[in-house]
Length: 138
Image 1 (cartoon, rainbow, N blue to C red):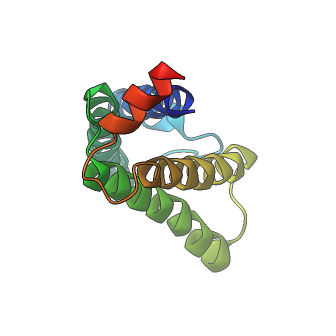
Image 2 (image 1 turned 30 degrees about the horizontal axis):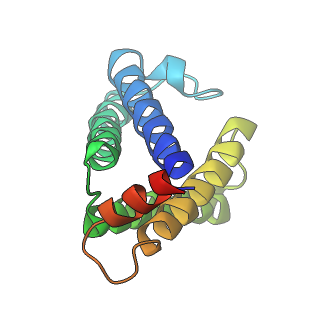
């Protein structure tokens, strides 16, 4: 199970990095139904790309550790959950966005929940290295 969740971490991390780079290089192309952006929205979209790259890098860094730090994994889970929650706030304020962003919210909530669940697999320890070792033995 730990191996599967580590793979999920890799997928989440790489996906966030790719999306972040896309947001910086071609912001309009990465927003289905987005139309044209004024200078303010372009700036915010590109800046958001940098944050996505940072989140993606953190996921990849965390799952590459032999003893995955629980605090880092829980932080990533909370940030991913907040990302999804902001979509709900937007929906309440302005209505449903393009369907791809509805799917994105579902993926973000799922990844957030699975990431947090992964962090609980080590009990009260500060790393998940013991779990990975036990998982490899079975």
